[in-house]
Amino acid sequence: MFEKKQWQRGIVKRYEKNPIITLDDIPQPSNAVFNAAATRYQDKYLLLLRVEGLEGKSRFFLAESADGVRFKISKEPVMEPSDEKPFKAYEKRGIEDPRITRIGDTYYIVYVAYSHTGPRIALAQTKDFKTFERIALITQPANKNAVLFPQKINGHFVRLDRPTHQGIWISYSKDLIYWGNSRCVMEPRPGYWDSHRIGACAPPIETERGWLEIYHGVKKTASGSIYRLGTALFDLKDPSKLIARAKAPILSPREYYERVGDVDDVIFCGGTILEEKTQEIKLYYGACDTCVCLGTANLNELVERCFD
Ligand code: BMA
Image 1 (cartoon, rainbow, N blue to C red):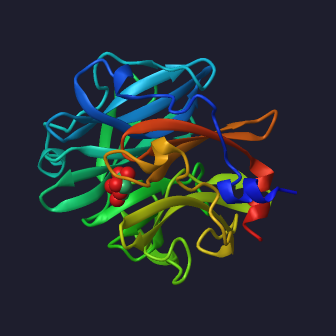
Image 2: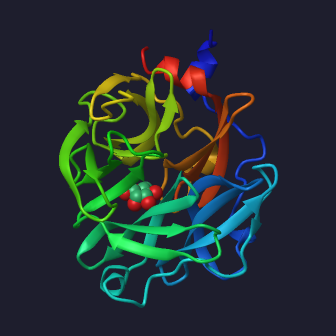
């Protein structure tokens, strides 16, 4: 059982030395580092960091770690807005908010390609985190917050995303390029902390009770938006079926670094790493579009919370 204080703070435990990555760690003059994708690669923890340059466009740096806490950051970006067709025209304003999903020995990176036409989703792949190959632009604008499921389901690749601002949608593909059978699977909840907008955050995690999705929810207030994290469970065999959704958020801006920054009151997660032995989830999140933080939670508790 949680104490009142713990409930209020959310069930994600913050790392005591947060933030774990700040602008001081980025080797090139930049404006901010936030919203990282996370994965395990060989015996390392890897983050793909969104780094916003002084001119205002984002690109990705790679961060490597042996313990998931202390990271070494690449000297140069590993992915920058593309110079090649057809990506060039759609990445003119930068590349943002990556998410990584491993399927077999390929690591797929879904990210936002941003241009004058608006944000849309693009897909790239790597096998070694040295060379990155773009696959396709997989949605039209406006679309953000895409995550790929870590395995094919009923013979299809599956993704969640957020077209327009109308909630989380699911789509299916045979080849990762052409997607269809799209439908809305979860919407903002009037009267709740996620009443204004929602979007998938971390790639879904397979559990015995369903696919656990950690998503962000936005509430509009008189002084702006508040971004929090919540949890939902989708059916293992038919992930378009929402099984359960927690009433309360699992993490809300409370600490100073989560309340004040380039964009106040923002917690935005891009990836988690599961410790198989302890079933602890390391959750990497951007705070206030300004820095990268770490929180931990027990996988089973996150699943249980969906039924509260
Ligand atoms: C969302 C995304 C995120 C950002 C958040 C808060 O729409 O663009 O990159 O962290 O807004 O500004």
